[in-house]
Amino acid sequence: MRATIQLCTYNRSALLERVLDACFEQTVPDDAYEVVLVDDGSTDGTPATIERARERAACRFTVVSQPNSGLAKGRNAGIARASGERIAFIDDDVLVLPNFVEEHLRAHASHPQAIVRGGAIEVESFDDLPPPVWSIRNYSGNYFWTTNVSAPLATIRAVGGFDESFSEYGWEDIDVGLRLRAAGVKAAFNPKALVYHHKPRPRSGSVETMVRQARAQARTAVRLAKLHPNWRTYLATGINPLQRRFHEVTRGLRFADRFRARVGDVSADRSLSDRELRAARALAAEAYFEELELALGSERP
Image (cartoon, rainbow, N blue to C red; front, side, top):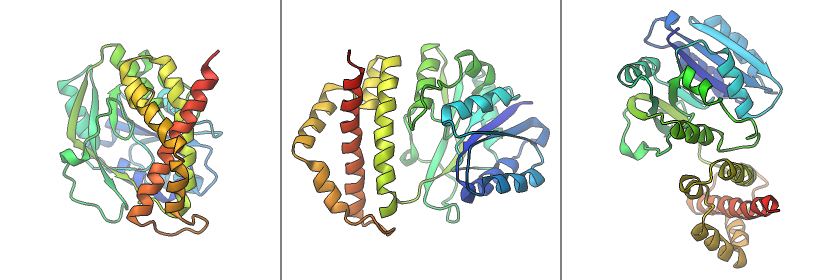
């Protein structure tokens, strides 16, 4: 088996059917790759979606079902069941192109020991896709980002897979990337290994979710910094004097209250204006840095 596409899913049955169909429609032979899906305790229509997918899958299709345990544990369950020489990670809101596996394998042929990062184009809907052409506007500087990345399976296993102490939202893939970098693993970028990443415009009903995720991400950021106390981590997480001081000032000026007032009523699901959306994102950032200080404080003896 040359490659494994690995993804985890939780309550995204509306997207999952399209995502799996794209995984099954690859230009490489069906016996050259497999799809390993981990259902992390979904409570929506995901089981029915998976059963329909089984009927259509021409490649090997393995499903692991587990109680809701978080992405790191789900990734490890997928890694344990993978049999491809290379493992390509995507998310359950990612639509791969037909040449996805082929392009990852082509890049690995030139860089056999490296990780391979692919291009990602953010879209608001899978029903309205732009031309599949990557540009610098779609660039991500992440070294290891599970929206679209592949690596030798043996290398991922050698660094210990994903750290399951990252049980909340955020940073579990960055942690793997930092361990890979510390082990001297190089990275190559192939813009032709392309995916569409579903990023719908936030609505009023998702503002509180944005804030909750920001707080969870702040808590896991402190975990990341404890494991990797270096400048890359401090810059990425905001755990540095400049950013912390700036947000200390904005908290003192009660900017969060101003941003929440600009967002307006979030009790009913409605479209956000550009001004409201900027305020919602700023509100989430304020929540992140507020929670960051609380989490850092709890780490002190």
